[in-house]
Every structure is written in C-alpha cells, then in structure tokens.
Image (tube, rainbow, N blue to C red; front, side, top):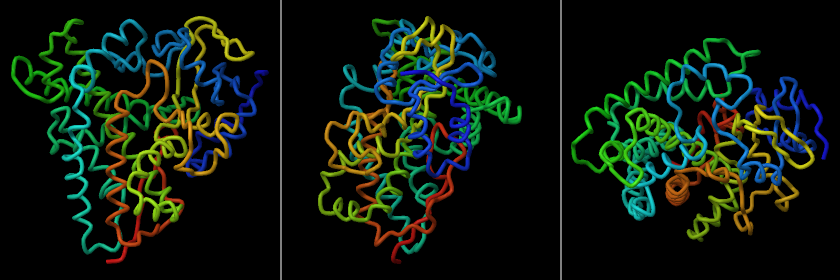
Length: 405
C-alpha cells in the first residue's frame, strides 16, 4: 500500500452537496487506504486499516497530542472521557458506567423497554388524522430526547434551551478555518460554555440528595475509583446529553428512509417482527449515524499498513467508508438484513466503542418496529430529503412521509 495525496476527494465528501449520497466518494477514497492531505493530516478509509488503528495503543483521542492545535481547543474546557486516553479515560468511563449499565446496573437498558414503547406509542398516537408527518420533528427527535432527559435528570421542558446549543456544537465539530466563517467556531464554543453552565447548575442541586437519575448518582457515588469532580461530571453529562439523542435521531430517521426505499423489506418486517434486531445492525453498517471520527492523534509514529503516520499528525477516520468496504463485506452497497458476520463500524471499535450503543439499539428497534406496524401505507414525499449540515453526524433534517388518513 502506498500513501498518496488525495486533496480533492475529502473536500467533496465534506461539502454539503454530497450529503445525500457520500458513498461513491467513499469508494473513490478507498483506492488510497491511508491518504495524506495537503495540510499534513491523514485520512483512513478501509476496514482493515480502520480496525487496526482503532485498536492501536499509540492512537490518541487527546487533542493535546496534536502537533498543531485544533481551533478552539483551549476554550472548550474539561474534555469528556471520549477525548481522553488511558488511564484517565478508563477511570472516567468506569465511573460513568456504574449507574448506566453492567456490571453495577445490569438491568437499566432492558428494564426501560416498556417505558420506551409507551413513549413511542404516544408519539404515533398523535399522528392520528394527519396525512403527512415529519419523522424527524414529530417522532425521531422527541423520542430519544425524552429518554435521555429522563435518564440524566434534565427537565424535559428545558429542551428548547439546550436544543439551540447542541445544534451549534454539532455544527462546529467539522469547522474548517479555510472555508468556514469564524462565527461558526465561536458559536460552538459559546454553546459549549452555555450547556456546561446549565448542567453545572443542575448538578449543584444534586449533591447530598437522593435520586435515581444519572446526574444525582454521579454526584453522590463513592465507588472504588472515587468520585468524579464536578467538572468531570459536567463533561460526562454534556457528552451523554448530546450523544444520547443526536446519534439515535439519525439512526431512526436513516432507518425509516431506508425502509421506505426498500418496501419489500418493510413488508417483510411487518410479518417477521424478530427481523428488527439484525435489521438495525445492518442499518448501522449501511446508513450509520456517525460517519466520521473527525480527528485522532498519533502520539508516536504509527504504522498503518505500509504507511508510517508521524507523531502528532491529525488522523481522520472514515467509519462509514470502512463499513462499505468490499474487501470486508460482500455486496456492501446492498441493504441486506440477513447479512451474516456483520462486524460493522457503526458504533466505532476499540476502547472508545460507543458508550450508549445498547440504548440506541433498543430505541431504534422499538421505534422502527412500531412505525412499520402502525403507519398506513407510508410514502416518501421528497427523495432525497434535505440533510442536516454535518458530514460527521449525518442524517435528514426532515423526512416528510405521507400515509392514508
């Protein structure tokens, strides 16, 4: 494998004009598995190289290990554990997992199935008498937001406040100083500060008080690793609030769009409800909600195939490209819920494997099953739909669907 410069493909992938279908560009990018960019960064796009580097102990998630500082990094305060390396990452992830899942809270996700079904049913009940609905605004957004607010202990009525902040933060993730206005970065930094200040205010009310929500349990948990500092709790809550609904909104919406484009699979799901489990796994491969990890750092020289990536280099990981790599998946551009050995990269891999993956899977399984079961001959109004700006967290901005009223 040789490393060559492919300066034209990545900007085309990041450009909004490619948002509806970036996959042909990913195929072009895979011709050079490790591609050196004009700015000295590297783009990794093939399955074997991606899985190898995601498990490489010399790959850093800490922005401080980049030889060139990321724009706005210093203003974004304490990083969450997703942007830290061991041992700090491991300690904080263990502390965050104690109230969220196994081994200390093993039944949390499975025990929510009834409540999740009730929320979904209530949202679909509101479709009654409507011939046209927006799967995003009327369903895919309010569902996971309601869930994560309940889990964290964030008042649901505050959603309009943090919705604006979250949008600004997401929009700033892929900030490019060469093409984007400085305002885009500044808005993201200010939104991060506003959201952290808001969460910090909620945390102050939780110290020394009983409660089952995650903020309260993190504020008062004295486990074997000690207790998180307030800054660490706020950073963790910030991560969970954003990741806990943004990815699921996209996964549900991408899933419904894919089913409407594959009516034979939609019909089959109606008669085979157990198909929903492998179907969601195939969605995570075929139309993943997280397409790109925009940066990682090499904190020493890293060998990726025949390429040595120098210490301090920025590395962009094209997860969605890896999950469509024909060297790993047969007929990768075919949506096949019967696919075997489906080790996709939809939730990443390695020590940063998505913390909330089990919850996102269950939410999406319930959401799509109930939509397919209860909507009356749903049809797309516009295809392709308008997409959200981000190439990193990719999904429709709206998905208008008609049904028989």
